[in-house]
Length: 129
Ligand SMILES: [Zn+2]
Picture 1 (tube, rainbow, N blue to C red):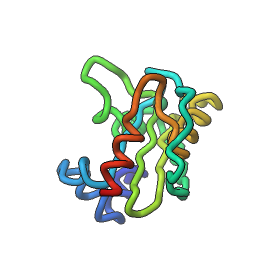
Picture 2 (picture 1 turned 180 degrees about the vertical axis):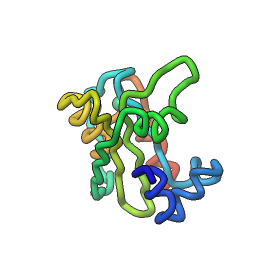
Picture 3 (picture 1 turned 90 degrees about the vertical axis):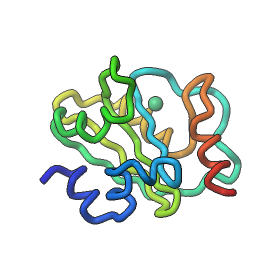
């Protein structure tokens, strides 16, 4: 059982994600490698999230992350944020380890968006309503 499958099996929110229900409710998905972290600070009230790092074979990382990238892109890693659980799950490839990629995802867990992007900010504002 992969880390992703195991996570989904033990987290109702993760199961909801599997059917696409929870995507708009509690989850933000961020893909790295396609952009750089911006210079706008995170929202002042960004929650402190427990970070869970999942180092998995590249193929498993792709399973966990590729559903959140455009069809023409290849995921390199991702951070999955569950505001309701106050958790951030980072999926990294063990086959292509990169400190820079890990640090990139850690910043997403802390509320940093990509340059010119407001995905995290928008999701947080939406979640608070
Ligand atoms: Zn990113």
